[in-house]
Amino acid sequence: MNSIKLNTLTETQAKQALTHCCAAPNWVAGMLKALPFKNKQQMFECAQNVWENLSEPDYLAAFEGHPQIGDLSTLGKKYAATAQKASHEQAGMSQANEQTLQTMIALNKQYLTKFGFIFIVCASGKTAEQMLSLIEQRINNTRMTELHIAADEQAKITKIRLEALL
Image 1: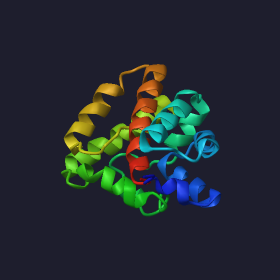
Image 2 (image 1 turned 90 degrees about the vertical axis):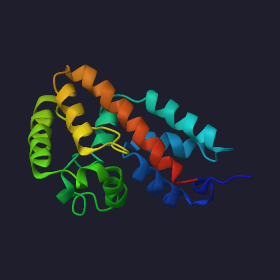
Image 3 (image 1 turned 135 degrees about the vertical axis):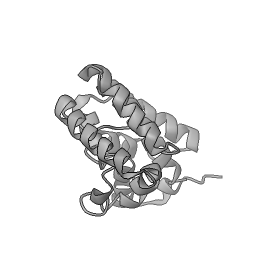
Image 4 (image 1 turned 90 degrees about the horizontal axis):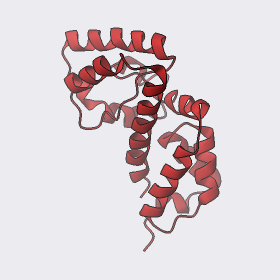
């Protein structure tokens, strides 16, 4: 039994669905080229393989598809297409106290200035305090180290979003 919703969509619909999973155009193109998928394992393996063969501009394009962690006000504006997903993924931040939110916002700005891209973390299941701790640790990394960590986190986020297409 094939339970992959993605296989039943038109190319336009599939492109839109995949873009909601990961905003990197070259990743979306690679996934579209691989359709149809026999099973979810093949879909996940393809997603990972395509991702691993991309480069920094692709990673940065993917990161652009996310609101900043803790910046809940942008979810409904700039990221309307993925706001529901992102707000669910960032549920831990919605329960944060004001000090944690303010610290997170300040560190997000510092992180963006230092690395040139937003802080990416697979936030599902993490509390605000855990995410704050992660940004505090990661802000001391080199740009190259952080790019690789962020890319790995993006791959986790993409897999979670792909699961919704089953």
